[in-house]
Amino acid sequence: MGRNRNSLLMACGGALLVVLFVADLLTGSTSIAAGDIWKALFGKAPDALTGSIVTGIRLPKALTALFSGIAVSVSGLLMQTMFRNPLAGPYVLGVSSGASLGAAAFVLGFGPVSLTGGSVVNSLGIAGAAWLGSAAVLVLIAFASRKIKDIMVILILGMMLGSGIDALVQIMQYLSDETSLKSYVIWTMGSLGNVTGMQTGLLAAAVAAGLGIAAACIKPLNLLMLGEQYASTSGLDIRRTRNLIFLATVLLSGTVTAFCGPLGFLGLAVPHLTRFIVRDADHRVLLPGTALCGGSLMLVCDMIAKTSALPVNAITSLMGIPVIIYVVTKNRRLV
Amino acid sequence: MLELDNISLGYGRKVLLDGVSARFGAGKCVALLGRNGAGKSTLMRAVCGLERLRSGRICIDGRDISGLSREEAARMVSFVGTEKPRIPDLRCRSVVALGRAPYTDWLGNADEEDNKMIDKALALVGMTDYAERTMDSLSDGECQRIMIARALAQDTPVMLLDEPTAFLDLPGKYAVASLLAKLAHSAGKTIVFSTHDLDIALENADGIALLDTPGLIHGSCPDILRSGAIGRVFGIGRKNEKSNLSESVFNTLPCRARGVCPFP
Image 1: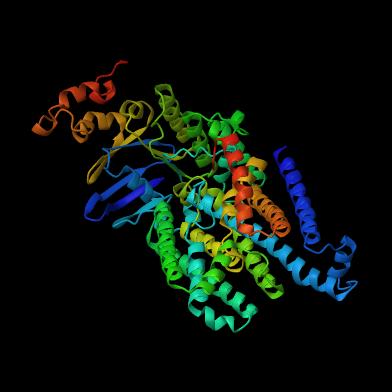
Image 2: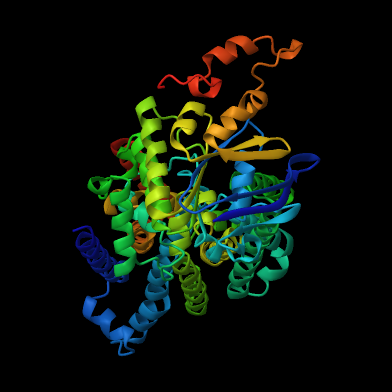
């Protein structure tokens, strides 16, 4: 019974994701007929403008929403299971702080230089710097976790590192001029719009690799639910698993944060929402469920952000908070 | 069969065990006794291959545990800890199925043989009817049984349990201890469980291993009782300025530990 219900839920989730993706393609400031969008996707646009809007703006943006939603949600699930903590999200290890430091160093430090290089170089530069920042933080944590046995100590270490880096970023903000400060603040608000065709490809590749690693961790994640002592006496190599999860986190939330800014809240909320829907703690169900749920929610947020022209980060939090409060009070049990 | 061959264990400057040798045969249920901090848990971790020995070696069925990979070790020794994983929406059967982890594919999918082992493990601990219940709906005793079933499904010659009778009511303690003895005898496993419930240990176990730092005294229950080692280790009957409570402590001890048998 359970298996059939889960397959049905997955099929519904998949269908919902496709519908929302199409709806997201249809949403935008200029109204384009569904038929024209379909034609434009296959390079037979009725006119050049429609073609460039669909393939140059709508499609990359919708794909970015899809990938980023999946990525932050799955990495949130990885963190919640690894730390056995319902409050863990994709950013507990300081990934976003690392990314912020990278972005801040680029915008505030080299801002004036890069601004002359055009917006593509600029946005790629921010993304690259942010990605390096988040990767550096996780390399540091991974290195520390070779010595530290207790996973809780690693959690505290990650949070402290994050707070320390945030303080550095604040100092940099304080010392910077107005123009670069604004472009940094806009990055922190999160945006799916700055991602262009080639970057979408990069994002897709990183997310696919991250998801592959996460999928390979399904059995270890199930074992980790019982705690590290049970996991290791059941034959799990804890160090190797930790490193794989760190790597998946860099590829998933690190990359998304680099391109779209911190979208943290979704990653905390979606795994809870998914547990509420699928009613199964098994990661063979929970992981694909979280991916479908996260992708769908991000597409909805993107549609709202597009029609209201507000920053997507604010939308995800405003939408997510009531959902989480409802799930938590209805359930009164977490992880 | 579990063999400790001249092992020494400790951390920092603290020596827990020094040059200890012991042998626990198949089909035996052994209670591991000792004061708090004497190293019961550390010894168990060492048998699982999770603790580095200072010297000596630990062998299970003749194989040195330190030379095995984590997965190979998990096929030799299973472990039940003190933690009760009360995870919402996690079905009891899924927990028992996790015991098959050293044998299943990368996703952890159970094949026909795995499913047979899972059903058998649930039946042995009397929890077949609980298979589809979730872990957060169980009592302490039921949760303990599921964790024992998980270790049984792991199908190892040696099974270790860290204080399996703690936090249970009196009938619960007896039920778990007698279940362990029954499992050791029927499945031919070596089962070692640590406990502070002396009378329950003496009543149900086939043998006692008593941590007398830095040594380990082991033997059958009557032998250990007769030797007076229990009284010595737990500081009973020895009057000194440090423990002038010793007489009253002695009187609260279970009858069997005092050497007075209530059932002649």
